[in-house]
Amino acid sequence: MKAGLIGLGAMGLGMARNLAKAGLLAAVYNRTESKAQDLADELKVSAHTDPADLAQVVDVVLICISADQDVLAVVNAIATSIKPGTVVIDMSTVSSDTALQASVILAEKQADFLDAPVSGGVEGAKNGTLVTMVGGDVDALARVRPVLAAMTKRIVHMGPVGMGQATKAVNQIMCAGISQAVTEALAFGQAQGLPMDKVVDVISGGASGNWFLEHRGLTMTQGTFAPGFKLALHHKDLNICRHMAEKSGSAIPLSDKTVEDYEQLMAQGFGDEDISALYRLKRDKK
Image (cartoon, rainbow, N blue to C red; front, side):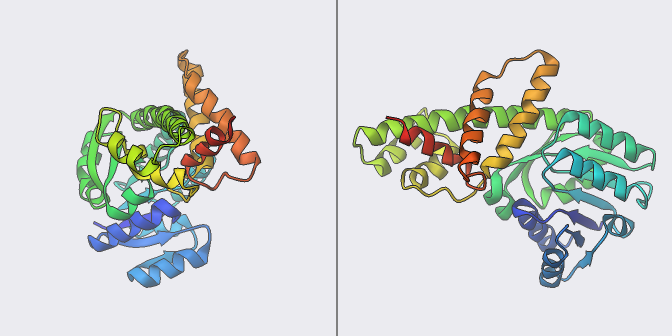
């Protein structure tokens, strides 16, 4: 089985290297051609300057890009050349509506589509420990499970197309709440004059412990906000969640507040920092 990966950002790079390690990666594409060529030379695979060309030479096409319109542009491009029976796996974070549109486009070409967003951040992509939530045909998932297993530690089928993205929306809403709680609590602790290394250590081992606190607690209290997960990308994801919530009549006030906070930070030039940069606002409040 030969896989091709479209999108070599911070997440895509780690995924590509793990696919190559498993002997599954055959081709890569990136909008910045030099980035694709450099990685192709490193991994001894082919680099393509057109997604349609990549789709012709692989059995599985993986997409890892950031915006809904870009995903649909790629799907429309590969639909011009894709072989019947090919499975397209979109690991981006987009709306359920976008996933459904992509599925319809590819079904006309007798190709299967899985929406398979991931959680675990850059570290997870690098270490092959991502969690994947999949929407789409069960048989198609069974065929490509070895490809997903090369990049992830857990693969869960959530239902038909769109359900993977709906599950990822739950994850992103939860991330907003956790980041708000952790940054607020640590800013409070720092204002009390506590030794923050000990605070992070002791609380990480208790009932309030969580991944974000354990992996970002010390760095944020030291004023370091290297991504990680870029704040601007979470802002984009939360706006998708807000749109989905509006359609379903749900209320997500904590996400609404987080979007407002992120917009303030983005206006100050911090959009490329980790989401732990939310600590800037909590720390600076008097």
